[in-house]
Image (cartoon, rainbow, N blue to C red; front, side, top):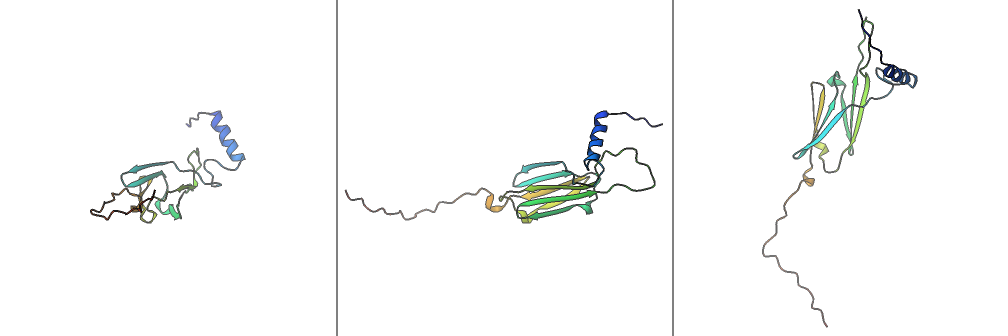
Length: 147
């Protein structure tokens, strides 16, 4: 026995998406992946939720100061009848514009339990530093002002 609850708003949304060429379960357009970002000491951490995505399908590129993350969740195929399709399948894409204060050459990436984690260190040139004052520096002589 199959119980089905009807939701007229969800049905209308699904119909509208199908008519306009997109929506859950299609591969017509990239879907957005949820993200969290924070600063932790001298590094920035960014996490993307990608449940059900195979790690080999994830592609990370940096060009100038634009970080692009792409991934794909493949819809299962088989000898079965789909009863519901609410999870998005197909291409996922997200771009972040990174500041000049980050070291884009040393980005680290890891993927565990459906979460892609990027760790981006702050560039050495952007870290605060102390300026030492040299002792016994000669004073700058000023020309006398004639009255």
